Image 1 (cartoon, rainbow, N blue to C red):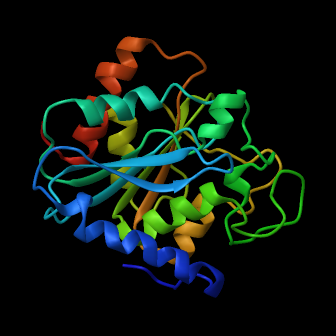
Image 2: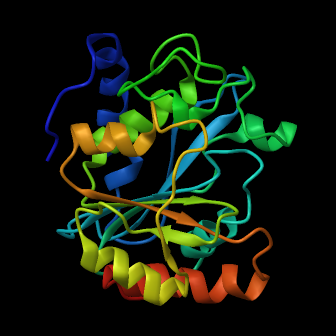
Length: 241
């Protein structure tokens, strides 16, 4: 359940994603359904897939490549998308949130903004944070989708710090399940320049679900990305395939 509404300047754009529930996203009870949740600065589409059972009680969002030079985890999400039907959860995946950053081989989007410093909670006018809160289309696309789903769980993949941030989790049991099934150590991550304007801060202020940051290593093996990690995500969620 959402705790607060979006800022007024975002309300009109938030309405756009509401239509997803009555179009492609809810058209069938099983199988992936693709939707475009927004476009990047360079007008590249940002795509999400809805997997599993839309009627399931547990709602989950998994996204990756918020930073364009952290691309390994997209293989995990694409494996979830392309495999057999998933049961037991209503699962949304966004394999690439920052397509311009991927094209440029950089952490930032095409305007040089770190998307994970651009959310409208404790935003600060510092380098790479953008001109104002939620100024970037990639930020707004993720906010709209998150508000539309109102997920019980969010898994946010990064690199290369190798661990799962379990500190302050609203669901220690879920964080521990991810740690075990993804075979990663529990760690306490600190933002290098201070945590401000992050997705986690925004989510925690506006939603009552649990968001977990998962940091893969610098060069995970392909077998991990295509087998161990996708199975681990589903196992931690209690989902079936």
